[in-house]
Length: 379
View 1 (tube, one colour):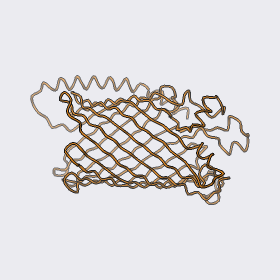
View 2: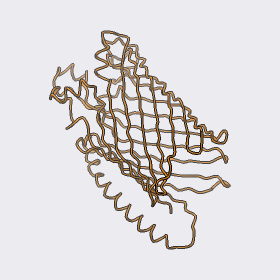
View 3: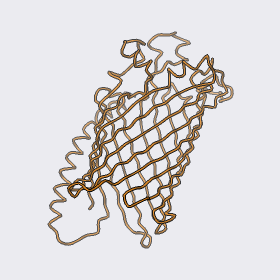
View 4: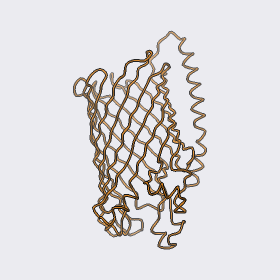
């Protein structure tokens, strides 16, 4: 884990490299503008910088925010503050061409880095590659792979260590994972102004050595419809289903059925809706607003009694994600966005004796607000 920390510290130079790249590309584009010969542009480079404020970086309930502020639970909190100023740096490079008749193919590589100002333990990166292919004039698909090498969630008490040392600070252990994601979507323009997209993902979570019972294989499928109402207004609606099959044991010779470890297996239904509206042009600059809403109902399926698995027994979650974005296209292939995202989770259980505990552990409220500056260059 220390090696990962050092790696994250090294890539902190990324903002300066992106800034240098911005000036190189800008100068190159200015010079190319004097060339009267038009060229077919197959390459696309874009990168963005997004500073934003996150009100609750570890998704703590009010109980744990209060305990953090009161300097309680020695060993639990490895952060300097529960909120933070975050900077997200992203870069992408893609190549497009018509390899099959007049059907476009696009191959892409993307990279993003999230840097936290006061809590570097939360820094994380993501890589992805993808292939998008038109196979009919009105249809296309995309295959992608994404990888997150390290993501810190928070510190939790480890029951195995408690059995040896008791309730002391050392029994708090980090909950961290790496993740890969294999995804596919296919879309078709059904009618003029009507588009449908179906998507599928297979995701794997690999937990740190102290939490291997949480290793999981997740399966997601969904569909979303987009409808153009007027030239300026598009609405969308969709649904997705996720099944997360957790390992549920951490010792050789154990199975999920014979293990005394927690079982985080769950399934969820998510309902999606969105609206996008083009606003009147401002000084020859186009702009629009978007509103996206997600509501999820998640149910955990463990057969353990709450005395053995209090965090999952009978648990059901209500999650919401509401995102509002304003976008404006500036001269020079620059887009600026301002956004506000409201997130939260309400956790409950039918077991009255466990209801307060599980809510204190998992319910939370959070918002993120900031801007994003994106530069796009074709060559």
